[in-house]
Image 1 (cartoon, rainbow, N blue to C red):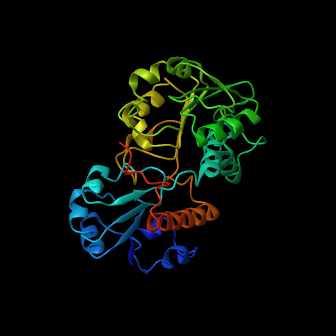
Image 2 (tube, rainbow, N blue to C red):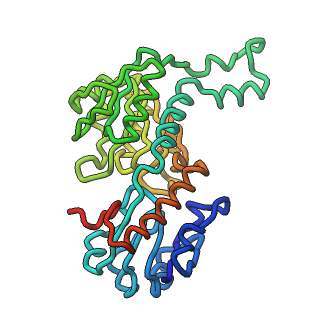
Image 3 (cartoon, one colour):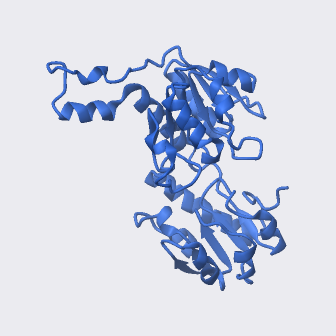
Length: 318
């Protein structure tokens, strides 16, 4: 079996072993693959693994032997599933591998915005502390979370875990989701109530036609002026310009983002100059043990496919 990894560096910069996947055949590893290189690199492949590459009709038509495609990811919006079905290619994802890590990052963004630990450390090292004029502790407010309302949009595994951590910090938990889950530790409310009641609104839903740019000028106006928005889900959920304007004009207080609408972030993305906006480079899932789990689960998907299993197969949907 000829196996190709198109963008290995995005998952493994060299600190973990590809052995679980290599065990299935001849493995060709590309650290990076430009869009125009995909067709050439998968033309003889039986199986392909990718994290960030976009594949559809054009790419699949250049890979007559391809029968298995696995995302090193939970989301699979970069793959044209209809084209995969036309070419008889089974598409798998890896759900649930990073639940705890993403929930941890969600709270890390929140705590940095409320406690400003890095900013205070930086200013302290410049010589600013209580004995100096212009004390750095008054540069921006510090916010106590106990008693505040943590709102969750999308109560899947990550949303539920983030809510549990927020609850441990003394926060009141509310949520909105198409599916109510017994694992959710808060109270379900309407979507409108979620936006207007949340002191912190944390996004944990997929990017669909229903949710794309759900954070927009109108919904932002319904939020509290002191509200904090956290997005560790999908950048497409947020209208970047609308959020930038809301932050700069005091419509809401702050935002912590691990994802943006175009990745890698473009130099002209308005959020780069937005007030009180903390951005990390889609890094919530990057702890080494999480990436090791991801590779092992992706290898299990190939085993599943070879044994006619459909667990984690997504092209059968719809």
